[in-house]
Length: 484
Image 1 (cartoon, rainbow, N blue to C red):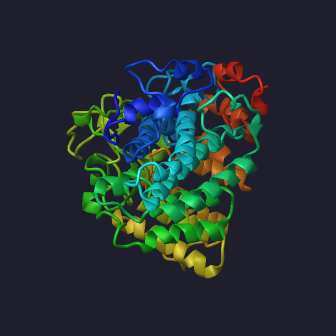
Image 2 (cartoon, rainbow, N blue to C red; image 1 turned 45 degrees about the horizontal axis):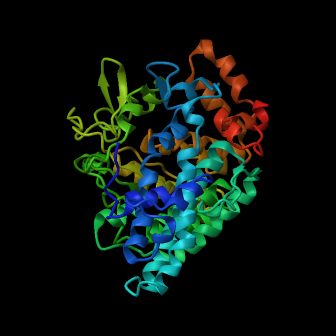
């Protein structure tokens, strides 16, 4: 795969400097005739733009892993073939050399973002074409992308090394011990505070507005981060900032729901990782998703005879083939079995329906007025899907019941978008571990349930172990406690 949609000019060459690890210093000292050294980079407006574009390029390389981290262990899928790279996590046991345990590509995002944060601001003194505002936007984007990368890592592995210096010289120590979850989350929050102040509301094109860091993208990530930490008032407020921008973010009508995925960059999209096969930008999202069928328990929700989900169900969220009901969001170009000719679906990190349901979950933990709005938000999503809405006078509105109702709606709306494991884990770490355990156990075959329960009963097992190569490369890193 070659990723050039975000690229401008020098981005490919800059990537070598942006991600260069310790040990690259000898290469940098040689100054070959047909290469550029680190000293020659970061001197012009073009260099600044190419540098941030390279960070987005590295984000493209991670989307399949983000999808698998968020879905393969959860309860909405069943693997067609067991124990390959994409499906092995479903087993809830992990060989120490498993592809899904590698994090180097995510740390490349972080390393490149660190470089942009340090090296771009001085360019304003070297090239008057790069204004202070433009420099601030680029640095804000880098803070957002670093925060996003660390949020995936902290939810997947728990404690990880916290590296905030750029990999530009041999005096930077990258072999550092892991940092605590609280410290990583605090750094994520700080990055997002800075990013919110510096990135724009929108850019000059739809592609950039949906595909680069905007205030809406920052606020959506803030809502997610706050919700993870049970900071419910803050999560609700951050989500509301996105929802309040009705000029930019609106729900796609139910009749066009599949266009969110087929056409990409819809009015619902808040932040999407961009791909275009005509520019040789492709990904493995379709292949990965077709390795799973819709879990039979989850299928019952879509195909409920009393209220079938015809907007998000068969020939939309999933399709029927010889393997069964396989997920269709990253595969199809229409609801009528027309497949995408190039493997270039966007990876939707955040869209408006997701943000609305995050706000609903946060409000469910607050006062009665908040709970009433939470039900209204869920009803808005259900009405879009032509499903019966809830009468607040006829349902239980205690916090746990509302959260369960919201989790159900998220499972229908956001299935196979890399959300479900993190949804269950978020509720589990914030006082209800039985939610994750019960959902995982119920989703497995009867013959597998006792073993599945044993493997998820300890919350420490919800974090993945570190790959054997990561441990070998960093002597200061010790294995996650559950796997010692």
